Length: 396
Image (tube, rainbow, N blue to C red):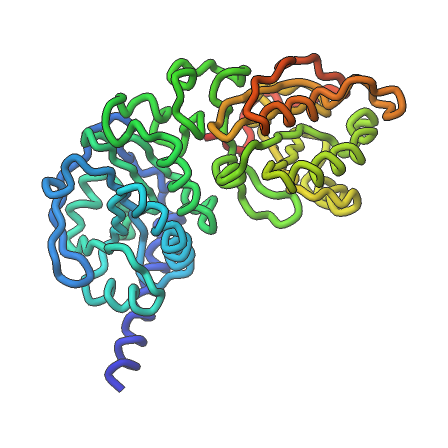
């Protein structure tokens, strides 16, 4: 009976939290002034679900992931916890200290951990001191905004994710991939090279010498821009780090539903994807044409039977970051996140006239660990119809 009462109490508390958040969103634009990349991490000293206190001083010299979230037991927070739980072994293997942070007390945290099988530490910020110090207290709601920080061994913020809601199902894997891709956060390089502003915005998925001199847009030999866009069919948000994780290479295909040149390559794109996916290569299509709505892209993807996801880029953010101008236009990214090929699939839209096969050649060389002989070719096709400015796609 006591356990039933506790469950009812926790459920009621969660409902109040959700209502408070909804009220705050209606009354305020939730744009919390989160810390920016390069800022010193504020101090903290809070108890966990077992009553043990954790401090910033104790974590000095460690890589720390701080996942602020609104409330235990709520739907979004549970999804985030599941994602982070799945990624926890990988994060732990990298030596990362993981904390979930919310304003609920240790008793609530312990019950949440028990119910959802959460293996990492939850800090109880009942006085809201840490949430306030990190700038994450939602006005009018009294709970934390959903923001995640990664603090480098130098004690500075190396990465900020203010868009966790956009990738709840993959957030843990995305953060783990980012950390693996940026070993310098364990000591050495300055944190400020890892991101841009306070958004989830590391322009590379691998820190390399080339990446330290990142160009404004994609260039062969430099770290490939990442993206975070919706799958046209499932609606699920997908990111380049998640798609590339554990793969030998990744192919990004800018395509179109209406362009006759792009459509002439649909069969070849499918055959290439099937052949090289079996060899450890990830494929993803992106439709950036503003004249092609999501529903049309979803239907087209199903009809073509593409063996890879096709994402929609309504604000041209991805095509701008990659300097993609026509469809089809292709990019090959190696396992280190470096762009090694940009250009056409082959030299003729008529399969029978195609004499050179640059995309396949680039993949063969990359898989063999060899440099791509012809790393840039001129793509040809229909121009991507862009919007002048704005949009709601995101590149991070």
